[in-house]
Image (cartoon, rainbow, N blue to C red):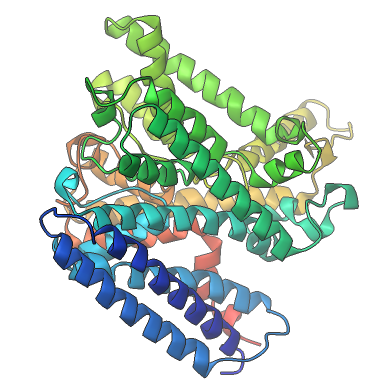
Length: 491
């Protein structure tokens, strides 16, 4: 029990903090006369009391100084805190006027906190403000949470090659800030600043203040929850905004997908830090190529101008590639090539240390470097060849770690897809829903879970399976899977 005391202490503190945050959407419902606002306000009040009471009880029972965390405690805290927070976050959905039910409430909360963006809710345009704001807040919390995890936790746990970003083992010149708390504070300030800039840009484009604050949070978090059923397509219809708001969203989705550690270095004097990172350059190059491919394709099929073709392509490509999941149109109507293309790019993701999801760019770079070295060794068996990343040699442990992660990642995806097919889902729905959940993208493909669809019609068992897949994808798979290895629990 002594070993679990720090785990439950941290989880209790997190639950207490989340309960306090629930008062924000409760206050948003105070001045609203919309239908269901009063019931929604009561739901948040009750949920806040339950979360705070549970959190305080856990923290009080386990209170005490934490000298150091073991690897096992790190894994447990990472996984259990997310599960506990999702459970607490689902309470307002279950108690509120929409009465989503246990399965739908948990699914919606998991999708929000993991920044997946898949939803079971219809009628967002008429939903209470507190309900909409809570969904956005969950994604905003999930976005900053995964950044801190990627920089402070995953390198310590060496998950899938993340030891590349372990600050303690870097040269002193590469240290961002001397302490983890200072780094977390700097990243939070930057995250808050980018959210404010995004809000200002949206508001300046003509969004209402409420829509702007919600979409600013979900854009920087690369989450994709919207306040409208039509997602960003709502703002592109006549009269709702004054300018190309989708291009503004594209810019901030990209900013949210770049490494926040590089931003901190930039503000500390190393102005070229972001563009000096090879994964940033690779990410931008891939986004440009993908946009060009789709733009060329849709402009040969449809009568789009160059500007309109570029707008539609870059917004939807960046949205899917980064795992944000916004949609400005039903790209399922662009033909089989576009459907297959979007299915493939949903696995790409953004940079390490960003809010984005998916495989992450650095893993693709390491895998390509390993493939290139293998090809050179086949051609020149006696030649000494060394794989490099960001100008540094890659040791075999990193390469093996990344390639192992690839295997586990796609094995997990395949397993989830096969299990979904047992619920009598068609192949397109099962494959795309599995890929979307593991990559934390949100919309899938097809009539049911596509950009014009909704996850609501899926069977309850499929939703629970996808909720597990979303958690595993967001926590880099191994962080969760290791808990089921018997040797993990042996001293």
